[in-house]
Image 1 (cartoon, rainbow, N blue to C red):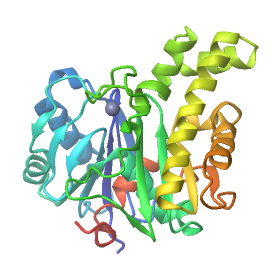
Image 2 (cartoon, rainbow, N blue to C red):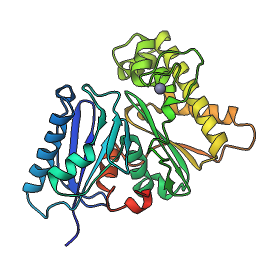
Image 3 (cartoon, rainbow, N blue to C red):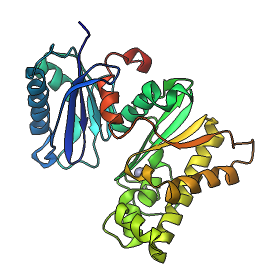
Length: 302
Ligand SMILES: [Zn+2]
């Protein structure tokens, strides 16, 4: 019988869970609200209930659980250092040990953007591009860097935080504590704020309808996103720069200017061979990456 795994994508507003195979075939799935304000203990207990509930729906019991989380986690120990965008005290939480004990199965945890990059490596454009940089564009800007078919994690599993590159010396304060990060300038909320809109989708509609302020907000964000991407091309010369998340749909407002910025700003070598594309792994990339964490852990080195 084929081995079944559990995958969980812990988000700011909802927890998505699935049982399925490491190759991405999902058998059962369920989504519940995160209610992170109740604190890590309650949220982790809810994840246990969720996984046990899915397992009770039939089929073999999962062999292991993989989780994607929105922040800093040491994947070798399962210790959550900090989840900045979640309400509650998400600092120094021994989530891996708690869940392994409660569920009686191995648990692996990875940052959610790195989960999405891992998914892209296994089943998306990674099959075509051995080296790529993935930006996840949404409420925050996350990322993952894949070099020669290997996701770069670094000693704290924190490598790839490309949304926290300093773009302006005295720019707006970022959630990480630094000033002028790319995330503070080009994330969905940052664009919406600059456009005077409720969210990035409304800002995109306004920009396309000729609203000058919204157009300027997108132009600014795209310029900095383009500079960040061009710097990564200069540093790594990847085969592709990929974008996922809700805002990656805004090709005309963000992706095309990024392409132009790379062509304009990478002068040391011809960069027109570097593809700039939307990620292929789809909106469930993070969840599917989590589902594959245990079976493919040798590719991650933990
Ligand atoms: Zn930052």
